Amino acid sequence: MSSLLEYGLDHHWRDEFERHSHSAVLARVVRVDRGEFDAVTEHGIARGTGTGLCTGDWVALDTESFRLIDILPRRTAIVRASAGSTSAAQVLGANVDTVVVTVASDTALDLGRVERYLTLAWGSGGVPVVAITKTDSGRVTEESVLAAAPGVTVCGTSAVSADGIDSLTAHLHGTVALIGPSGSGKSTLGNALIGSTAFATGITREADGKGRHTTVHRELIAVPRLGLTLLDTPGLRSVGVQGSEDAVASAFSDIDELAALCRFGDCAHAHEPGCAVLAAVETGELTDRRLGNYRKLLRENAWTTSRHDARTRSEKLREYKQMTKSLRQKYAADGGRR
Image 1 (tube, helix red, strand yellow):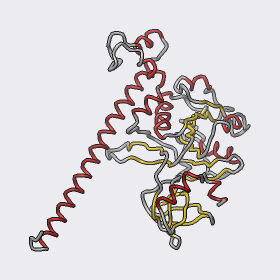
Image 2 (cartoon, rainbow, N blue to C red):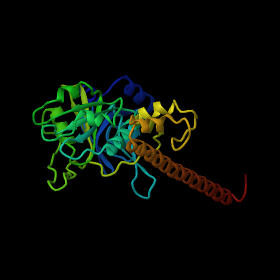
Image 3 (tube, rainbow, N blue to C red):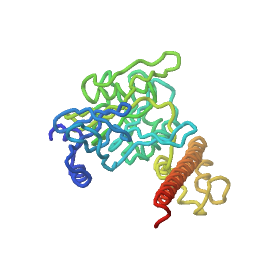
């Protein structure tokens, strides 16, 4: 199973496959296209059919038709909340070990956006790493990004000169997902890690520094020489958080640590006496901007989570009504006999 080993096969996935499927073939999804997908098997790439899966999933396929039989339980997943009116969440990548957040050095640094991406990364269950890209043509420093990334490794990189690539690689493990806005250099960085032009790249607009969506699919590529599997993702215009209160606490670990020193255990860090968080703002240890974004993400998380919970309750109620209706119809067809 050399192909599967290059895509992250280990004892865990072998055991899961044996528990969940019989007379099937084990595979890992490397690309998804509207009801069809490409998956790597022990014999190479197979084209299969099925829904509900995501790039990075481990699956069991029918040995003849490669139809999807089962999706093995995900260990981790990058999930963002919908930015629209729907409460549906979107899985960006499954079974990811390291999440690399790309920050372009040639555009204005938005610390709030960095914090939002790191919240998404922490919520995945993977380990976040920040890669500053295009350091040969920009001014964003590692120190400036660290202000929004306590406890996270931050590496400056240049795909042109290869500076920082080896340093970044040392912090990568297993399946590595690249996430960030369009034009932040995800695909170019991915190619530098792979050592070839595997991912499509584009150019950013000179007027505003924004990039086009060159990557339109999430694609998983094995990098045997590094012992990694690399997942490139399309640029994200919006990053919503959902069910991620712990992720917010991880992304804002400095505030979380300060909160433990507050006089009251349920301190809202608004106007309470003895609030260590507000005291840190007064002394300049913590900025108003960072505290404001922390509050914003907590509110957003609570709102999107409540929407999701309401949708779940509605779906369960609908299922119950349908089941009750079916039982009544069956009872009527049997002439009322029990």
